[in-house]
Image (cartoon, rainbow, N blue to C red):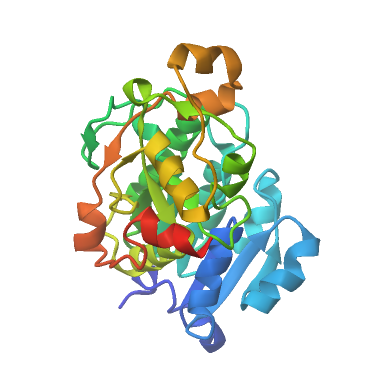
Length: 309
């Protein structure tokens, strides 16, 4: 096989095993690292030297670099055969320069054959409670979701354009609310304890969730099974409105159910960020995830996943 079709062919023997680069190695990234430790070489990009002991303990080789400093990313070129990109865009601006800087850096040498990007279900915008599958056009309304849309476009372009080095399979995971009992802020317990309100049934919105462990397993499945330039909804099979979700959690935890307020009252009382989550309603279809990634969820509903929290 010509070397330009085999990104491993020109590397020393010690580099010819599979190597995964994790960019944005927070809670979910660490769960992925722990799942894969010992099975392949895992590299983890971090901008904080203080995190290197934690990354090593999980089983990753830390690499210092900063997505906001493109020159620091040049050393990443050619290091990985697969990439898991979980880093968020900047908190301001119209696009995601971090993702564009990463793709430019990794194109300097042979590109990884498989990329997985953790996006957000927010790119769909408000679907007024309709069922949503991956063929629905993105219609982001918030600035943070629009930045994710920009990142998705950059990665799809990367997947289509790196033709001289062989095909690049880019899988985009559209992720809703992540929870887990052992995740910081990963259960509704704190919100319930302070009595934060939810909407009355007539004004309520459908919400979607995924357990952090199942999300990590979806990332791994997509790295090997994802189809080229393919979008996957990554969520469990719960069908709940937001208020019903918090009622269920309250009952499981033995806490009082949250107070209900109208949308007009919420607009007057709640901060913009919290209000934004109450302004979009959709029911996400996870059929493609289950069939193509062949992922069997360990926590198929929030009822089972919240019990540990």
